[in-house]
Amino acid sequence: MAQNALARERLFALRETIARLEGKPAPAFAAAEREALAEGRKTRQGVLPSLPFGVELLDRALEGGLSLDAITEFRSALSRDAGAASGLAMAVAARLQKQESDAGRLMPLLWIGDAVGTLEAGRPYAPGLRDFGLSPERFLHAAPRKLDEALWLAEAAVESAAFSVVILEVRGNPVHFGLTESRRLSLRAHAARRPLFVVRQAGAEEASSAALRLHVEPGPSGLRPLPDGSKLAGSIGNPIFRLTLEKSRNPAPLSFLLEWSPHEREFFPVTEPNLIRPPGEQSAHSGAQLSASANRPYRPQAMGALLAFERAS
Image 1: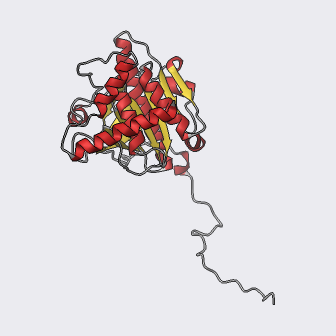
Image 2: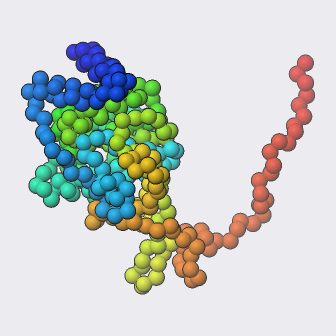
Image 3: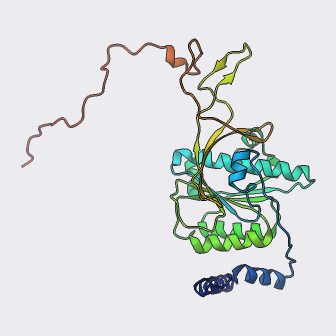
């Protein structure tokens, strides 16, 4: 059965390539629709509303927001930024849950973890999800052992249309998750009219069928107001993400700083932060007032010293 499905997808890909070379419309989506009808599922027509970020400049660049029937990729270039990519995907999923709750729909969310990525960045934590704005009772986590199993699960979950969003975690740029697999998932998302988020940890840019790809980096926290009216710099405040549009309908490589408020489940634009504290402002790091250690060299010794050893022979 799996081999027949794979052969059918390869046939669709060949038809699409031939149509592109001949300058004709690609029939891959039409083939996916015919397959859906053959299985007894009705396709729904009409334009699906997008999910806005709530930030006017960013939503204008995205022509309204994220497409809810396509792939959106959140990419971190370094392992240390994996938490930022995962956090942004969860923040967008929280906005989607809020939008569906307002419409009277309470659908679960499925997070498909990567085995290696889980070892590097950990797995979602239920109390932390609640503090971040998500509903843990509507958060399902799967941990496939192999990438092939994760791709199969993502395809089946999107096609079932039982989840508000499916989040697929991928580590790096694996060989078995290329343009062909990405296009197959994109066809399933388009036919089922459900979004698929790909969270790529420590991965490089590559060709994919994602409608939108965001390069995500953590941003410095802003000044946090204290009860006495002063402001504290360098403390743990709301998450701030630095986003760069790597692939979108807007050809310009735009960059944004967004602050996520988990209580309001809203994004807010952030101007470029000023990391210089005003005079008399407190520091969040208690070690800033400590004197330097004594009786120790100021700098480490330079490497490359020669050591003499007696010859063994």
